[in-house]
Image (cartoon, rainbow, N blue to C red; front, side):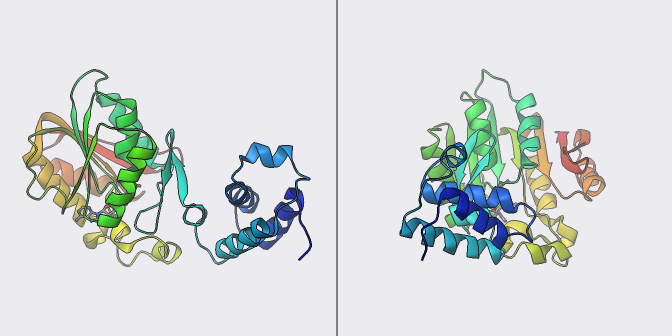
Length: 277
Ligand SMILES: C[S@@+](CC[C@H](N)C(=O)[O-])C[C@H]1O[C@@H](n2cnc3c(N)ncnc32)[C@H](O)[C@@H]1O
């Protein structure tokens, strides 16, 4: 094998990934992970020579990307809000649009109080940990039915030095015993079983993505539980699919929520619906 400089390795990877949308960014992110250096470092040292092991690790990683595996799974992490989160195949990769749910929740959580929040279906812990970091006085629960996801979420709390989140395993809020909540947030599975987009999501756990009843069954279950476990004037916030805004508003209205509204994401798509008990 010829030796390769940073610039040559990047040029090779971009060519390998040329049919993919974000070839240049992926090539950078993966090399920066392999080298244990920042992307700025790569730009500063284009003539630095990779060791044989580094280039061979890079080649394997680029091949995985070429086969369609998401970059976050290849490097084992994803940035979300102000956090770097570990992700594995037990967790959904946190999406940038989920930051809208975090923003809307933060607008309603007071800075100084023991406000009680549950994040249902926490996955990597993305939502719960972002809220906990911004509101260190809040008392936050991060719940999931997946043991694997909870292990990752707990590691993410430790790594980010966040200590106001408790973790629990269960089927949504079944058997909840920690008193009434001020807020419930959730990015539940909401993709319909026959949605053609699922074909593009084969690397992520199907239990994190798919729900019956056109993708609404978990939203319906959580809403019924929220009526039982939210304090009066407590908030329920859901992330959902771009075409589910009106259906989710109807679920919340029928359950008796007030001030129900849907907020669009930065791409102009319906993304979060919320209401007040
Ligand atoms: C769409 S993922 C969201 C992950 C994370 N909150 C995020 O926004 O990146 C949905 C999560 O719900 C969890 N889940 C699915 N069904 C569940 C259930 N019945 N009870 C609790 N959690 C469930 C999955 O394991 C998965 O982690």
